[in-house]
Length: 478
Image (tube, rainbow, N blue to C red; front, top):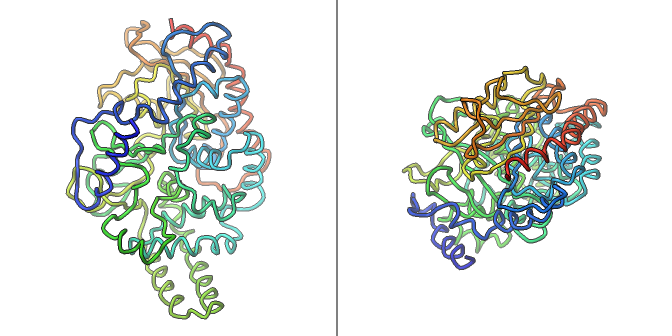
């Protein structure tokens, strides 16, 4: 299998030289025995321990966490803490994320801290000062990264600045490593042993002339794992390490810049996965760009590199022209465009269920912090969107009718019945936890009380539902 993956990567490394579609390749053939499959093997013992009985069969459990800005990031932290508390975390095979949940899960894996330490650090980051305050240390760390990227592809996008800022704010304990760590770095035994496979989700529009996330074109779903980038529901794959790389220029540039960044960093990926915020962040980013220009000029005067400072000033000033996210990457799909635009998948559906439905996951746990107002019985807006997508791709999905939902907690339901109200072994069982604490999606500063309220809300919901989760697993396994 390792030979197969290496062969695939050798073929795919030239993807940006021309559009390419790979035929007769399945997800299973590329991903086995990969992170996902090795992790799935490891989860069986943990699942038996969680169930407190001899657990047979091939059932596995995945998690799915929503977008929703900082609110979703904080709720996901509480969700993970709850899963660890009840002993189910090690039983999870994969965790599908977008937007705010990626902002939690990516840094959590990167820092490799206990969940309690991570939550303490996160609380400090978002309760002591505004997200966009005290930029100077960030600018110093971003400077070289931006210069490298411009040398590589002759373009720096707002999403790069936003992603770099996210990395600095959320992974500051890692120092400069926060700006260089890659998603591919998670693809080793340390992470396979300790973390469910991360699946980050983005989409790209079929019509890309304007590259605006709010256009009305058809969206194609993309999942990014530490190994592969996959255009969902089609045989189009590429190694994740090639995402965002212009192969045409690599040979020449590698001779000029030995330490050039060949891989899309985790910070940039967090920017792509949070790019639904671009319309609001844009105005704030203009302030950041002004500060960045001043910082570059200061550095150039200090270093005696006036020409470099002028060059970078012109580069960054061009960003103020109003280029809005999403970001562009070389096209690796079957279309003829030289580039495709990636944007947070939350613009289509704020719960990234599709990767797990495609994998035919038997039981899925959902943490939904899409809004701060909770949900009313019979009204699950993002779940209904997920149901529509499942129907579009002919994927099994349980009925969401109120009479078919089973409440297991004040903020948790189970969906497992078909439209006739009967149990159907072909349908996934969905255990759905939802947020009920109001906090604006675009707010980047929390009080400690607000932070702890959301963390504890989701944590308690999971812990108090432990026996119900065991019951659903037992029923599904039988």
